[in-house]
Image 1 (cartoon, rainbow, N blue to C red):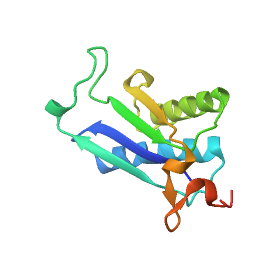
Image 2: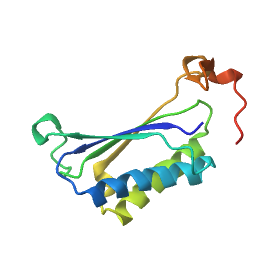
Image 3: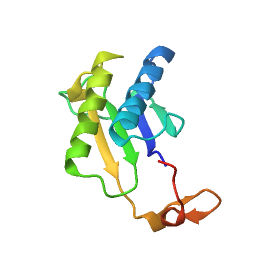
Image 4: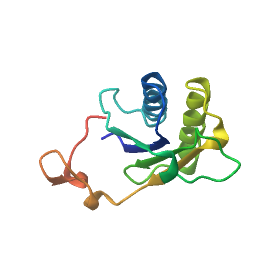
Length: 127
């Protein structure tokens, strides 16, 4: 199962910008975690400017990415993911790395219900 992604940005960005953010994060996950391209579950939330506070050294491109995933990835793999996401978003749509915050959430498998209400630890994934 591919990780579940939630992305927060400030509203007012173009469709192309939003699609580039979604694609950049997804491609980084696919490449780093070696999951099928078809495993995609992402949500992008646009918040009004006055509902999104960020440090003074950030810009209106501030982006918060929360990735909920199965536990067990090494720090080396997590570093690769962070760098790929930042590189992808720098390339397109042009978000500076200092504007990107990534948070990984790793609840235990018994806290995931997937594929017909089974605990994730009881499901055989094809990848």
